[in-house]
Length: 587
Image 1: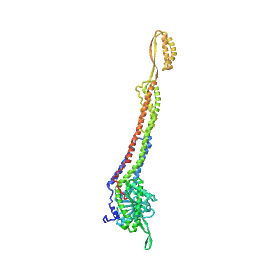
Image 2: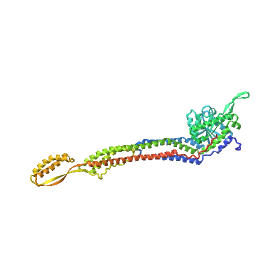
Image 3: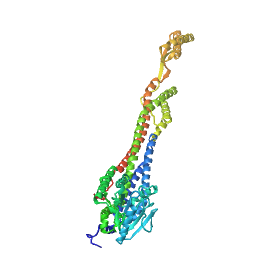
Image 4: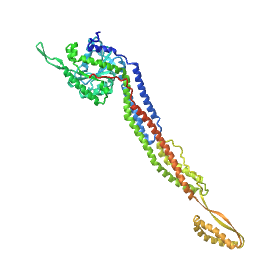
């Protein structure tokens, strides 16, 4: 092997391929830890959702949206990870080799450049083998790649050079075959670096630069933009005949085009929202002419004039960056998976959590608004129940029995009409307690009259008869004087009194004594004293149920707040990327 100082850029490039090593165990362990952390965090959020308390009907729809969106985000992330499994397996199988993706639109010169590199490797004694990938499996093929002005690549094909370099020739990025685009997207993840080829006749079209910017933004791999066909046809006379001959563009013309493509590529990268590190992974564009190099026999001078010295030097820098990227690619893939999940959680789940918590606040306000109406309605029922119970116990004057009946009736009203409404809040509602405190309430009012009775003889029968008739007549007057007795009761009392008076008048010299007689019972005052206590008992019962319902809503809200914090912390957490490669531009 020649001394490194006397080697051509091409020789140095092929010599560097032996330096590639297998992915380090440390990086793979970091990637596994990153994936495990994501799974643990997602599992924690899922368990918090499963532990949500019973949800009020007013919150059910919004909470269901939270759960549905979370499950959808996680399922989509898992699907994306599984979709990339084939590319990851391909990367693992090629862990000790440099994998470069060669892509570009139709007729960009991908197959021609790959054939040229194969020929140069063969010239340096390196074996090469072309293959294609079918369902993720490698199938060796004879010969080299077909070239043409139409799409010739219908599947991922590649070449293995010297057991250390893999070139993947993807279907054209603008191929009319949708399957080609899908294959490109699937296998692009397997590459450690990329060559974006663009023809000099239409170098750096907007669509190409847009794809370049997206690739730089979404991946850590370095990219070189290679301008192919940097030559022109110049007629020449050979043995007296005019023949076509291709010549390289002059250096100044190449430099102008390369500077223009680099400027517009950087603008595209900035417009795509990529950061400065992404822009730094764009190595300086360069132009080549495989046709001119081959035409001159691929001598060192011909290779240099056709731009291949610069290309192989750039590939050497690309290899260094790609090796760094390759060593941390498993970790990078895990971090990209995490970032995608974070983005969807932030965009879809966090807003749903906010809406669910707002629904809980509205439910509590609605409960506060309807509680006074419930109290008024049940208290009105209680007033009627109180009057009827006191009336039923007028004879036995059992206040406690009357109050017990009122309590039972009001509790039944609450359970029959109020609880079904409040049950929407899914509180653990126990038996309602409606207790009217009888302490100091007093009892029924009893009404008495004092009546004098007479003992004696003589003209007793006459006196009694006359007294009875007179008492009946005077009873009405007595009843009108004693309003609490009423006219009818007064007539009876008056009859008794008149009879006694008549007797006294008809039986001279007899003895008299006073008798206390119960003449009536009323509960007006008892009812007036009991009504405020009944209202208070109703209010206390309703407020107790209201408190249970609000506690149920608050319990759900507290759980949602915990989940919101978990999602927010996970969605906002910055992944540790301190090991990210520090690429430098070749501009």
